[in-house]
Length: 142
Image: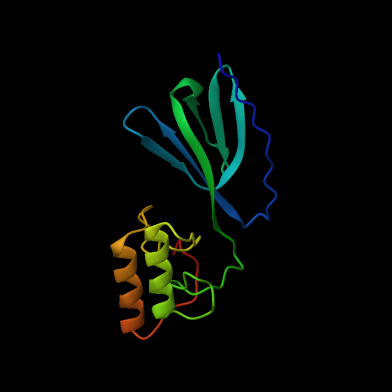
């Protein structure tokens, strides 16, 4: 019998948002919880509470993977499409996405079109941003 023990803490301001992704079953069904407030483990279940007080429960035995992602903060002023975070949206951001697809680098903002996959469609999204004259300031979740 395997026992998994996890200890972690997230410290954030009231405007910060983190996403929790719980992957279950053989078909890798993914449940996404944004505005995460608290996670507890009770009676073989993962219990998730959001900032609005809503709770949901998933049987721990069905969980194959669980991970977090930083979603945004109210002070996030980066440019959409600025994958390499250099303050510009240009060809270097396309190269960064290609490098992530190739597995030679990882960028936290490579999923430009926000479909949970980093692929050719993110390259097209950056090309469209460049072709339209640049990006608007804002986070990936706008």
